[in-house]
Length: 264
Image (cartoon, one colour):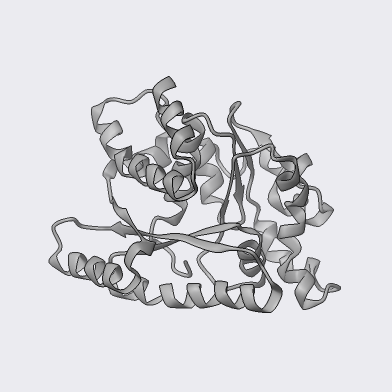
């Protein structure tokens, strides 16, 4: 969604973590120049030398994604972000408009063809840009995230319109999997009204799970993702586990999901 501060990067990185912990092979791609997804996922500073050796800008510049993939663990791989993504338009200056829009899709072609990953999760900046349009074109499914506040809700129709335009103009085969709602304050009557409005407007497209803001999540960003968790930490991640259940169900992974849960 084209708005910052709504928890989009938290959601994308935690979904990557949750899916990998359930036994799925996941690739996380960070297309945001701020690199928050990279630092949150790895608990490394953006100055870490590894991010200079392998990153998403090098992947785009050299048109080689595979050589820039870093293994976090057996089930979770990632391509680090880079401030260089701001040079996307310069990289594209000799390409026509269609090739620009479909560039990231082409970059991912070999990855998709190999079926090496069950999920590829792409995190992008909260803005309209040629790079984001190209990232949107590469996704088979979109999860639109909005916050339970008025201005964030207003951006949802624009995102949906942009997806529909890509489908119409370039034949992009992509669909909206659902709308995820984040809530700042569960005690707020106004926020509950906003959530009700979103559900009435978009009906079954809205996930049942509402992501509530938890203090523990901010701590994870500073201290790292907890591999071993006490009860408060499990509670903080419960909304993301519930959302993962819904995502898997909508994508037809119900049976596999049940098997993975039994082994966990």
